[in-house]
Amino acid sequence: MNKYTIIGGGPAGLSIAYYANKKGLKYNVFEAGNKVGGNCITIEENGFYFDSGAHRLHNKDIETTEIFKNLLKKELKEINVPSQIFIDNKYVDFPITPLNLVKFLGINNFISEGIKIIFTNLIKNKNACNFKEHVISIYGKKIAELFLINYSEKLWGLKADKLSIEISGKRLKGLNIKTFLLESFFANKIKTKHLDGSFLYPYYGIGTLFEELARHINENNIKTNSRVTKIVHKKNIIKSIIINNKELPVSNLISTIPLDRLILCLSPPPQKKIIDIVDSIKFRHVILIVFFLDKKSVNKNGSMYFPSNDFPFTRIYEPRNRSKFMSPKDKTSLVVEIPCFSLDESWQMNEENLINEIQAKLIKINLFKKSEIIGSKSYRINNAYPVLEFGFNEKIDKIHAYLSKFKNLKISGRNGLFAYTHIHDQFINARKIIGDI
Image (tube, rainbow, N blue to C red; front, side, top):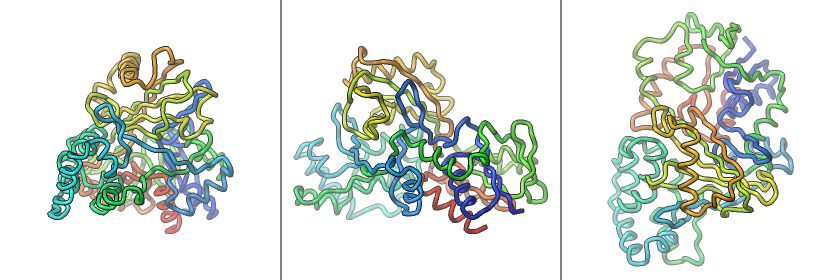
């Protein structure tokens, strides 16, 4: 019982393998894709590199940071790039601060909305139970709708009153009553710290982190192109898994695959009430549309956010702004993120038609000219993140309670735990899992 089978070779699975290796435990990692990293990889196309999303390594856990600094040495740099929101044909700094609002709203509207922010904070709705009520109670209706509600509805695919407060995380940190007053009266001395402006990033993309991690721990223990199709159990013990039509015995199983897939792989299956709960939880997919450009730079933003429904995408990022090595000399690229469900129009649309539609919108807002396009590519990410709708915790607790009966099963990962977590969170959780063994 001293061997560990890890399914999923993304950040969560590899972080567990790292600590298992460090502790001298026997383990194997099985990854369905053809490379490690899961939904956190870097793709190369004719000398252009782009990530599967605007991923970042936040310097928020000392041990995680040190692991990657030791692995990548000088090829891991701390960078500081701004982010902005594109709204009404203007760019506004993100996270939102009072100084941004003066520029965007004008002084009269700023004062009016400022009074509302102060008033709503004084009579704050402590019983707000969904995201919409929560942000309106902090910022007032106008600012909440302009910068937070519309964008969140596009991102998550649900109305804001159907979303959990937990989707806000720390993204609402930049605009509160304290920073509002400080920046309003001491604009030249007080600067609100931008939430994710500073982060660690490798020369050749975020995927380098996990490629190097895999090489460090023992690549022979990591099997790619290995999709789990069945998990066999008996008397509350996981006995084996079926991978590529081959049955492998299991001593201890650590799953980082999406929670719904884990449940549906179980043989025999769980009772109907668990299946029904699993059928009711949602994962959001993402389509990436990448434009390779004969242009030195588009702008200096790390990310650009688009809350308006005039655009089917939510975020655009320019890889070169993270590292000059992400594009050939004097060229750049733009990566457009379109979140959707499998039945949405974007997911169903013909690839060429979708690229042409996005291209036309980007040309219209002057991000590039048609003559500057060298090429384009689309890339699909299934189960990019769990949808944290209102009341999701109760559902997930029931699923985890059912899974807890298996004595040799542990769960980790963003989609396994059904939690909106980051790279450093996976390593923190991995330490806990291996430390408990």
